Amino acid sequence: MYRSKAAYLFLTVCVAALTLLSCPAADGPPGGNGLALGMDLEPKQITFTVDYIEDGNPLDITLPIENKAEDTVTTDFDVHFYLSTDATFDAAAPDVDLGTVNVATDIAGGMTLNINLSLGMPEVVVNQCVYIYAVVDSTDVITENDETNNQSTTNTAAVILLYNGEAAISYNIVFETFWPTGSDTGNNTIMALYDGAGSFLEASDEEDGSGLNESIIRSCSTGTYYVLVQAFIPGGPYAISVRTNNIAIKLFGSDLGSDPYESDDNPQPVYPYGANITPPPASTAIKVGATSNRYAGNPDWDWFEIVLP
Image: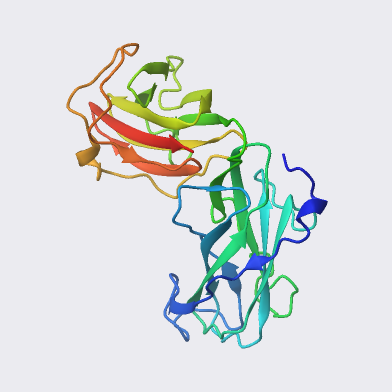
């Protein structure tokens, strides 16, 4: 919840550093070879490097803008940024308007332009993840082949934990495993949650045939938490999401076929759950708001570390 939408009308894009870089687009080389004639701008995955952000501070982000068609974009255009507290992005009535930046660099056909800038974050009273999304060519000055792909999707928007550091902090956190593509592949997992000292807090072990889909929803305070995901026969792909309960699950386009994370396996399984543990020496850090595409063999156990500010 935000104190007042009107209170944030002063918010604009704080351009601490604006650098424009070009690199080949993923779907074809520049200047032809299968690209359609015309112009077609699309925002790609918005990225940032911090784990979380305190309200009122600037958030440094990178927005790639791809020209998916053959002709060079030579006209200046605006990119408008918004903040949303849920997966419904409505530029006509956003939660918070973060402002506009003008892009005055040509984008050749089949190329991607990376914009680096800072966005001022609003003050909040609810500590939760938020979406940061962009609308490219927000005033429609460029005639494009596809005018429907100018806005970030829930998969390409940034998701970051935004918190108020002036009050006692608690978070409604969802720890969840699920099928990476949304399709059942027969894997089975069990999930357990521990605090930073290794004290057992809660476990999820669905025995109703849902197998992989484990979920722990818990009010958490500031501190470190560990999640153990253990796989059983036959083993296979899974995804894990750690987020506040206003954020939607992010599905992946494909499953993993093997485990590239063997170094995070702990040699001592702890099932059945309920006992306290020694915090694991090897764990994978995962940001609140992030989703990770994983693979666990049979048997296998993966440790994750979450830090709440």
